[in-house]
Amino acid sequence: MTVEYEVSCDRERIDVSWVHAFLRESYWAEGRIRETVERSIRNSLCFGVYAADKQIAFARVITDRAVFAYLADVFVIPEFRGRGVAKLLVRAILAHSDLQNLRSFLLGTRDAHGLYAQFGFGPPQDPSRLMVKYGPEASE
Ligand SMILES: CC(C)(COP(=O)(O)OP(=O)(O)OC[C@H]1O[C@@H](n2cnc3c(N)ncnc32)[C@H](O)[C@@H]1OP(=O)(O)O)[C@@H](O)C(=O)NCCC(=O)NCCS
Image (cartoon, rainbow, N blue to C red; front, top):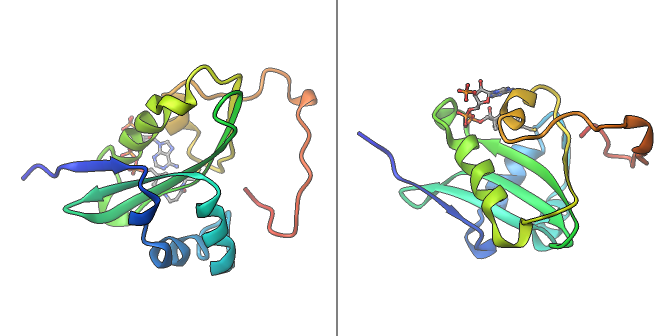
């Protein structure tokens, strides 16, 4: 049976409790409180993937919609992994009309470089030009 996937940017459809439950256990957002998740969703361009109306993946983009974007909090539920859902999601994100011709699109990952490399992401040309100030919740 082929499963139909729908990618949506409708923030109202996002299952915030479910996103929070995943993120607070993730390696990059361990312990993130619900209020922080709610605020981050409210202030980001969010993407959900749905199968039969049930949310199976999430990602959000922090952006000025002109020059810069940062891709964050990408995940697919375990039951749907290895079926191309993340690739569908990243493809949809990069095709979004507000995310065209940006000067730079950043992300951080521990082990999924091979996913993003398929879409043109790579190490910074000159890492010495990038600086980061880490906050208390910092492993992304
Ligand atoms: C990483 C994750 C989003 C991938 O989702 P997915 O739907 O299983 O991925 P897809 O089926 O679309 O395929 C991913 C492709 O990237 C490759 N890849 C590289 N690194 C990977 C990694 N760490 N995990 C999964 N796939 C990875 C896969 O081999 C696959 O390549 P292919 O095109 O040759 O088949 C998913 O495993 C996940 O949610 N993991 C837990 C959360 C997480 O680590 N998020 C990423 C934070 S940057």
